[in-house]
Structures are given as structure tokens and as C-alpha cells.
View 1 (cartoon, rainbow, N blue to C red):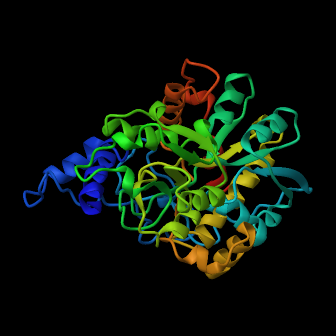
View 2: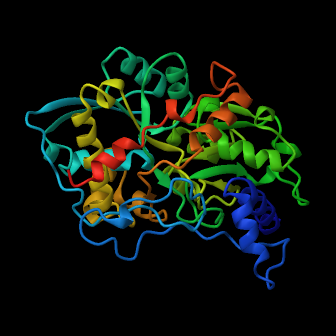
Length: 390
């Protein structure tokens, strides 16, 4: 039953979440493949040799949403630090302690932010509190999911922008590899792959009905003749969600790494969705002052995070990064090492924020019902300035 269920779910998710037209062309192009049982889609990769510094491999086409695309990379240590003339105080809100915030935690722990003459304070705030603090001028950066509080804050007049992306699935749709994604109790899906028993179930999601995870969740349940409104989406921290799911107290949970690997050995649970391979649901949002009057400080922050990815997170975790992240998350290094190597994409794909926003509007996760233009949500110029030779 579990094997059949996974094939059906994989097909649905691959068609909708991981860019159906690209993947369908990939499947149909192979006469050996049975349309009813497709293989897992390919995943994104890093350049074979990005060269020294930030060259041609440091920029990709944001319109490229293919699941097997090559993500942007510079050489190790690049872009090189260009310390500000005087120390700049910056407050960064971390909205969840999970893999999505690894670049910032590692940059702070390994001195990459300090190398830019940045005096950084990390504070733990949920997203609602974080964007209220940003609007009040008390928080400069928010790192985490691209969730409803960001969209609501921009809609209500805050000129914040998503500047950097976050993790993408290295092995998208590989439901046999424990990774960030949606996990359900196996007994909810019938022998003939019917999802009727999923309807009405409580599904725990960090951020609840306002989470960016609504994008892949809604795509998946729609393919199984439900909607996201047919399940009860409840906010819960990842560790708590994993424990309640293990206890069968809820029907499912969206679990980010490393919480996802903590349930992998439970035969009563199955993974039914992963992150998209083509785009990230998380990232780094800058306050208006970093986009305007204090833009040099904003560029320095972006440069430090991008350099951290190229140096310590280029193709998985370096030993130093794994140790730093374990400390930052308050877990053992084994918990970090147990999952697949992460893949971080500092770029922001075209249309990602629109697709997340559409899913949130559909379920009433945001406080408005008309979509926002991408230009009002994303700033790609900061990335370009950060990787330029100066």
C-alpha cells in the first residue's frame, strides 16, 4: 500500500509543484518510462567549477524554473569582504530555528558578518512580531519562511523586500528520503490511494494557515480531490509538531529539517511532499532603511550571507558549518548530518512570491484578497550589488 501511495502522490506533486510541463516533457521523452509510474524528478545542482571570485556562474536566469537547473555559485571566500567604514548595528529576527535560517546562523557564528564590520544581534521572534518590530524600526532583517506576515506587512505599507532566497530540495519528490516536507499518518490513505480520510484532519505547520508551505500543500491536496480548506492547518513549532505526529495526536505535519529526519524511522508515518526543487519557500527580508538610506549596510549583509553559502554551504555543510548550525539550533551534529545535504539558493525565482501569495489568498491566510505585484515584494538588485567587484 505504501509503495502505491507514494507513486501516486509523487506523480501529482511532480506535475503541479515541480513544474509540470518541464517534468512531463522529461518523462514523455523516455519511451522506456511507464506514464503511471514515473521516476523521481532530477534535482538542482551546483556548478562543476564556479571559478575564483564571482564570475559567470554567480548569476542565473530567474525565469529558469527547471527542476534540474544549476544554482548560482561563486568561488570559496567570494564575494570578498568590503568592511564598512564604521561599525553598523543590525538586528536580525530569526522566525524559526530550522535549516531555512542556516546561512544567517552560520554567517554569524563563523565571523562572516563581523568581517563586513557589522555588529549583529540575533533575536528570536515569530513572524507576526518580527514584522511589527520591523515596522517600528526595531528589526532590520527577518529570516525564515516567506509567510503571510511578510505579505500583510507589505500590503499595509511597509516597504520591505525579499532580497535573498533560501533552501531548495536537492532531491525533490524523493519520498523515500526523509527531508523537509509534508508527513501524514499512513493509515489515513486507503489501499486504493483515496484521501477521503485526510479531510478534516489537523495538520501542524510552522506558521499555520499563513505558512508559505501552503503552496505545495494546496497543490498536493488539490490533486487528490481536496483543498487546503478541507484540512485544519494549525501553527506549531517543528519539534512539537514532530512529537505530536509521532503520538498520532494529529493527522499530519509540515516538518522542516532537521525535525523531518526525527520521524523517518516511524513506520506509521509517510512523507507525501517535499520542498519544490525549482524554488525556495524561505529567504531573507530587508527593512526599508537597508534598501534606501543605509543601502551600503544592506549590501554588506547580503554579501556576508552569499559568501557564507559559497564558502561553508556550497554543496552541503562544511564541518564548521554543521557544528555552528547544531549549536544554533540546539541539537546534536548527528541530527544535522542525518538528512540529505542541503542546497541553498540565494537567488529568488520569478513568480515564486506570486504563487505563495495565491495559495495564501485561497485559504484566507492573508488579510486581503487582491494579489500584490512582484516588484513590491522582491528586490534582486541587492544580490547583484553584493556579488559585483565593487
